[in-house]
Amino acid sequence: MANTFQLEILTPERHFFSGQVDALTFEAPDGQWTILKNHAPMIAALRAGTVKFRVDGVWKEAVNSEGYMEISAAGIILFAQTCEWPEEVDVNRARRLEELATEHLRQAKSMSEFKVNKLLLARAMARLRNSKSQINLD
Image (cartoon, rainbow, N blue to C red):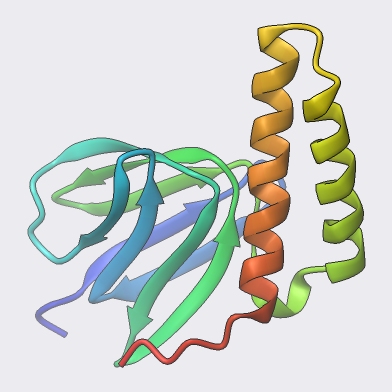
């Protein structure tokens, strides 16, 4: 396909995805971005949320934690602490972690503790949103 580019999604535990896509949408600290073929080279931060990409006209969606990506002429390499398909999300575990992070956020004694728990809460909330979302992007 002429309008596709290579996408690699990597986590410390696994090679999550590798293939040709024609669009990638992700959540950055400054909002949602969509990348198409021939995008200018850049490095972007990745916020906990969802990453969506289109393969052969079909949108795929996964939940990701914080990370970053490199966009180059060769394609995109996305590095995230975690990335999982909606069916892999353990909703009960995500709810428990959301409650735990919320409580720890309230009791944070330092800015460092606050930031860590804010990240953990964002990750749990993204997992819960994604596990329930069945959005048709076309």
